[in-house]
Image (tube, rainbow, N blue to C red):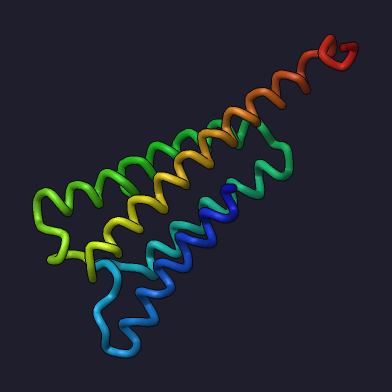
Length: 131
């Protein structure tokens, strides 16, 4: 789920970059290249989870999930309420997709954290292997 979110989020920003290369307005005003670089952090934490480094994954994953809630959802809502959707975004659809993509991302990371917490507990509790 997390890798799917990362691919969708990267594609959204990649589309913005491509649009600006052809002199069209981006999906969202801002810095899509910097956003792509920041998304790489999420890719690293996904790899940490796959490596079963659960404590590190849980710690960093919680922090990155909070950042995703604030920057990936909250900022888009703030932009709509304070500046105006069409002042910042290419269209209402671009604004709605930005929020929906990141709601999916938050959900994926929260589920991943819960799964990692459960796996970490089982890994550290020898009695669970006897069941």
